[in-house]
Structures are given as structure tokens and as C-alpha cells.
Image (cartoon, rainbow, N blue to C red):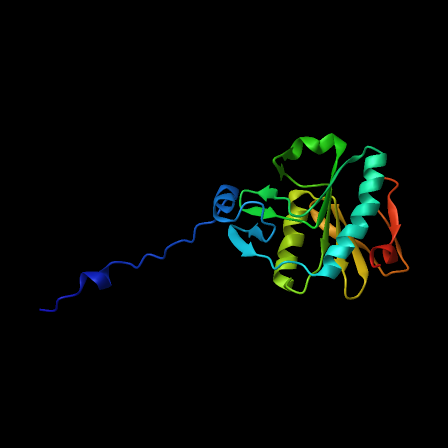
Length: 194
């Protein structure tokens, strides 16, 4: 008589990986740290940006912030700022704009899609990460997205139509970007690369 082991007869269970939520993310990352994001339920460490990256943010923030404030159009915020897009996705865009009629999504963090998201590429950004961020921004309702490439000195502008981003322009330092969601706001691309 042949004896078959119980181990062989029992099907092997594959443990399903738990998707983390914002609450998990907030508990597991250092307070006030801009170096983490939550992508599809996984905590991602983001390297600190270099001077060029931060200088572009400063130049653009001066232009954009002054225009929005003067015209009382809403709020402009810079990273670090948790933006909770889904239960399993919390990001920290470099710059974001929320129109005055949507300021109710600000409650300690930003709980929902900003009207405009600005991302400045860094050396540490991977193609996979950038593709995922573009997908999560468009699918959650970000209306306009600017992707700034500091090396090429270009800005790629996207417009959201029915949950999908479509590229409007790729502008170099001679180009002028006109915002879709911030009526009347435009700037020469070269002005942010000083």
C-alpha cells in the first residue's frame, strides 16, 4: 500500500499581497516627508530633487502663484503635499492648482484630483513610474497636466478629454504655454529655465 503525504494532497495557497491605503501610508512614512508616494497600494521612495528641479519649481511658482492670487482663481500648492487620488494612490505633484469652486477637496490633504498638475522630471524618475502617474492623473480627473523636462528644456502640455490625456503641445524655450484651466494665464517657457 502506498501512503500519500497530506502535504501533496492539499493545494498550495498563494498569499495575496495587501494593497496599502492612505491610512497605512500615513502611519508607515515619516511625518512631513516629501520623499514618499503611494502607487497602486505600494509605498515608493522618491529621491530628493536636485537644484535645477527646485529652481524650475520656484520660477514657475512665482509666475503662476502671483497670477492666481491676483485674480482670486483658487490655490497653487507645491510639494510636499499629499494628494489622495484613490484609496491606493497618494502622490505629491511638484505643483498643483485647485480652482476656487473646488477648494472643498482640501482637508488637511488634497482629497481628489487637482485641476492642474505640474511634474518636473528628475534623474530618478523611471518610464514605468511616469506612465503610471500619467494614467492615475488622467483617470481620476486632472484636467490639465504639464510635464517639464529640465534637460531638454521643454514642457509637454496635456488636456484631459473623457478620462484620457491628449498632448496639446511640446514647447521649447521660445514657446509660450497658455493654460487650459487657468484662463488668461500664459508664460514663455524660457522664463522658467533661468
